[in-house]
Amino acid sequence: MVYISILSQNMDKFNQENNLPEERVELLLNAKGFKFVTGVDEAGRGPLAGPVVACAATVLDWNMDEEVLKWVKDSKKLSEKRRDFLYEKVKDCQEIRWGIGIVDEKKIDEINIFQAAKMAMVEAVNDLSKKVIPDFLIIDGNTTINYKVRQKAVIKGDSKIFSCSLASIIAKVTRDKIMYDYAKQYPHYGFEKHKGYGTKAHIDAIQAFGPCPIHRRTFNPVSLFI
Image 1 (cartoon, rainbow, N blue to C red):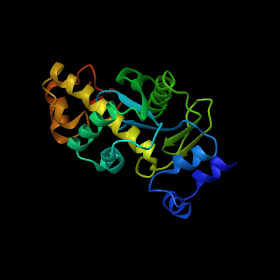
Image 2 (image 1 turned 120 degrees about the vertical axis):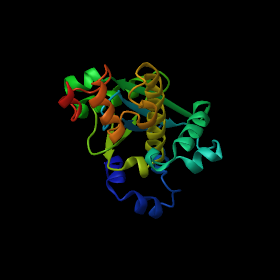
Image 3 (image 1 turned 30 degrees about the horizontal axis):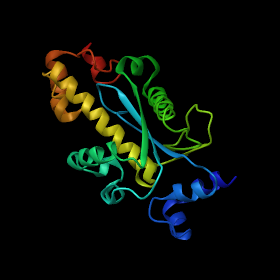
Image 4 (image 1 turned 90 degrees about the vertical axis):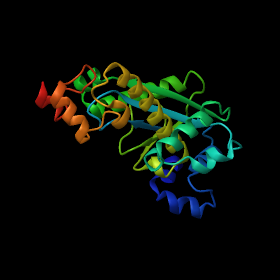
């Protein structure tokens, strides 16, 4: 079917051959009858503490703020300052709709991070569905999610497809904000700096003070200090 063949191709080559702007596969899917093409991505698979957060993002109109169009790309390729700037732009952007899903560290320990990330993605799509009903999902990664709508997983979609890039930024900033709040509750761990990732300073703090309530107890080396 056309929606599968579109997303099975090399995305850069596909955009060039179809004379599309970079990272705008959504436009052709729109032309094929899919009204609400939605990118889905998550942030927080790797950290030793805190939740995994997912975002589902849909572009309603490409005539939006030029800085959003220019700078939206994989969140890992942007500075924190640039991500925060774009988040504030997107937050008030009428041309975009998005939803958030959050799965906490207790659930991560219960079902594993892979399943928790997929759960967060489903929650994000459900949240978005309160505003618009997605009819095609582009999932960043190599697996689809348990949701009854046409979808395709695209490896490195967050660096190839605009809506996935947008979702990656919103998910990352949302999670960072959560970790800043946790830093105030648990000041010994430096969450405001590393956001829960396994830096040397973070691991040293776990060794010195033991795990706190938001640490993922099934993750090494946290499990070594319980």
